[in-house]
Figure 1 (cartoon, rainbow, N blue to C red):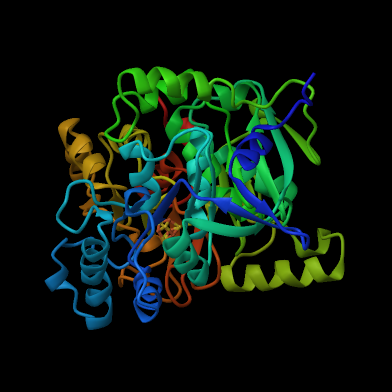
Figure 2: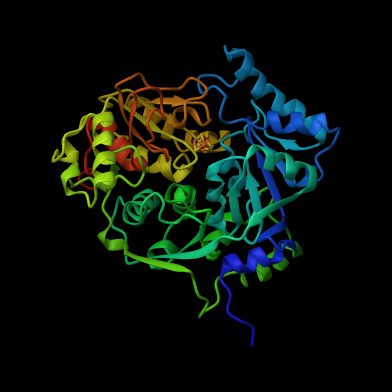
Length: 467
Ligand code: SF4
């Protein structure tokens, strides 16, 4: 009888071209996704007079540098940023790569567009020159971020050298409470295992709480695997996956769908397969989460208090906690619900999908923003759908600003930043020093918690606001 294998192992083995004696493996890449940071890789390809080897397996969209006030590249004031948004279309057209360019309703954040278009499918090996490529594992793909020179390598060869990661299982059992989302689960996981807790591992999320998550919730979960140090995050494909994929533009059709389904159903981890590391959490214990520091591991329940560095296990941690508190201008012992916010951002590849917007609108409905609040849909199609459902109207009536799709304040390279000293409740994935602008203080939360902060002006347990 064949040895039981993890889902990761099954996908890895299917993509091996050759194993080298030094521990490196050449892998075949099924999908290469690109964003507007790809210009340098295209330039290197041109220097060597090479073409993209598999343009039919490469897809691109501008997201980092595109404006969220207007989608016209000519409105971008910075010439270098304007060039990056424009040149991605020129490069893709020259190489025959499909690009969802500025002005195309399919444009959006690459990690939102891939699943939305059905480019992301179970069993595929996918890469992108962006850390949060782990997002695509939510559909049972093996997906990870790569560096700029690796992007050129994939463009030229459709292959990539990698060392094989280890496998880690994160099991979340139990029933989540109302208002608890994929974002709260992943912040609870990172809070438990730490920002380096999954280094060198591919994380597979299992358990009843994960199975009960929508595809949007799973995408959020896998998106932040990289924030625990994981190489990738994955959820086994199931009926939720199949229902999500069915009829997506690039999903298999007709007899190909049946063939794909037969393959996909064989992907989940076999009973008895072993993982190098296992972690278990109780889903019913998870509360709405808020980060207090400058790492996603600095996460605690909204019902908690800012921790005291004196309670840290060692001097190194004590000092890093103190540095984080100084930057965040917080005092140990402060109840989280007493921390005021200056601004709110709902968006990013972590939390800008339709379910995220519906949840935020549920809280915003009939209430008024106390602080400036931006809502940035993850793609043009999500923006259209939200408008068809009247969510934009709910946001506008609450005083929220409804903007064009893009990465926006997640990283702010397009100019969407806060001002020094501002405290922002953000649905993005990184609260590093200066991530949303110099001196800006970022607290990571779910869309529901972000909307609750917007209408109360401070962190508020969203469970009190649900009807
Ligand atoms: S939304 Fe943020 S994390 Fe996601 S791709 Fe854009 S900059 Fe990166």
